[in-house]
Length: 128
Image 1 (spheres, rainbow, N blue to C red):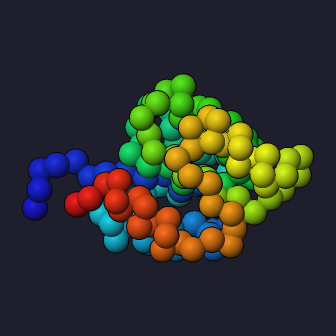
Image 2: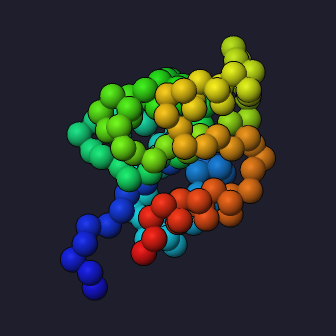
């Protein structure tokens, strides 16, 4: 067993049905995964802890995904951020995606998306 610290991931999505398969796939890549169900919980999870990768929805209870991205960028500019969105109140999917990228998301996936593509992209960033 390696002495290297395990890579960590944060998955933020209001739907447990969306979080669960992402968590399982990231764990198969060797990540320790923290799951949260809203933006406020995501921001709280980021306090005092640095994650290697964050996958966040845009539309969640509490703080939205844009606020989550802004919090990450203020505290840990190098974190790889991936956004998933299916739309929601206030902004179009295109507007939400543009804002996410302005704030530093590596890529925005529109729901329904190919989870294998997202996991492959994360795996390429963090080879074992």
